[in-house]
Length: 273
Image 1 (cartoon, helix red, strand yellow):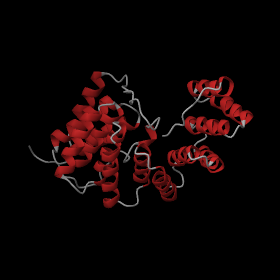
Image 2: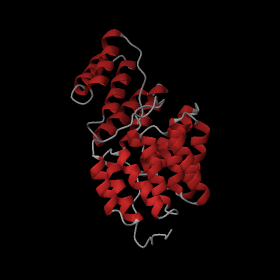
Image 3: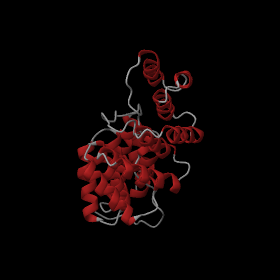
Image 4: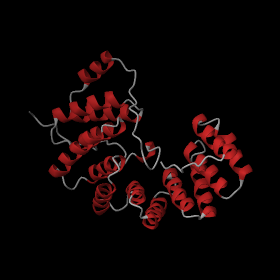
């Protein structure tokens, strides 16, 4: 099979798709399949004459949550150019987003054997291991990413979450602090830092981290939920109730949970992104 020439900058999914992580201890990511018709996808494939075109079209679908259709286009890109590492990484991301975690691991292990210097593949592999609850393997993958590309905030965020599930909370805080230094507009890293600080009883620092996450992204329901829980820990019931009211316009389910914590004394767990 003739290989496609890669003579321009390729496109890839954001390394370590942490923006879609709902909690530290994940129950699994729900597949988000679109309603795009089979005919439309067939037309996309007909237009897809090069691996680069297929990858770019797949990435556009991936970014809008059309994971199933994106996967079809990434697989076509790989058929056209079997050595196209970025398409493997993007396909691995679609597997993660549709909770096909073991398939993601197998695919990404395959590409890292062929291209051991592909940092993003290790980063995405770390995400798959993290969601499987395999903290040591996730940590090793993120550390490998860090050795290849030291300046990625997403990698530090991944390291922090791996340290968390391994119970190494001081190291988690250090990693999240590095993440926000590298990317001061990373709302998820500020949220995760707040989770660790709140768990350690450093409530004022946690509040500051959650508030910074909300400055960056006011619709960040998870950060607002965590801020409310932290206020409850500080026995600031009125402040927690204010967060409940503000949550109702963003995420009714989280608002109801926080309301139960305020009025029924239910024990709530902090959430990470």
